[in-house]
Length: 355
Image (cartoon, rainbow, N blue to C red; front, side, top):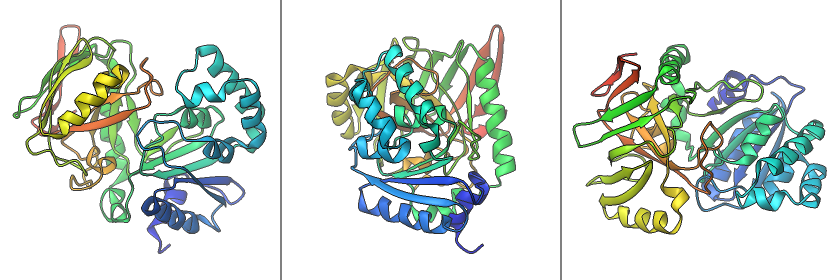
């Protein structure tokens, strides 16, 4: 098979010819073009449908109604609107009861939901109810925000078996831990609780009702809200080349001050206007030894020997914070110590993976 894009369908999603597969893109031309190429690579491997929706302008924002119609069918979307839940979902203001109504509607119309979905976009839809409800209906979802063609030659060429082993060990350690401390030579020093939270393994091969990034390669967890204390020094990486770094001062789980790179002013104003955006939402450990830093954050956060923190929404992977925002930041040469009771385990030692 000559087109590396076909591996998304054969190796990651493991599609069968009779399955319905949706390739969903936002309207940013560069990413819609990549998505179109991926859709073409899948034709003949499954029943491929390609759809484009208006760009959202920020990671974590719910895609507009056209994406919902493509994902769940017109009947389900019409019922969500008639029951008054779609508007609340799009605004990220759903109550548990409203979300339960949406789940019931999606499950009732499951025959209209594709078996597998590939999301290629500039603005990530990973941390959205759209993705969560696709998984509720049993879809296998691959999320590829910021994906560019060069990644076929870098992170996508990783030895999946070895990467998966590292990723699962990291996720298992995080799941068993009560707290985590992260330090780095540039000044990062932060501690947070993960008690009762489950570590997740992103290995690039989602099963029914699961999702994964592509490129894959991280173990991640939602820190307990209100527990993080310390400093995060976010260095260069992806399209955000922070020189000097952006420094986040975190107190009781929220950013209280940002300094360093001038880009910090943007986040200071954004967090001040939207307090839910300032919540520490995610801690992740990169496990992909073919990923490179000089790329989009999608790939950079997977680099073996780095960790990343995200602020904003974590309600789709075990946290309690809902926000129309999710942004990751890289930390280099980290030392990560996970604590369970009186026992401490070093996950990374100055960037060297040791789990």
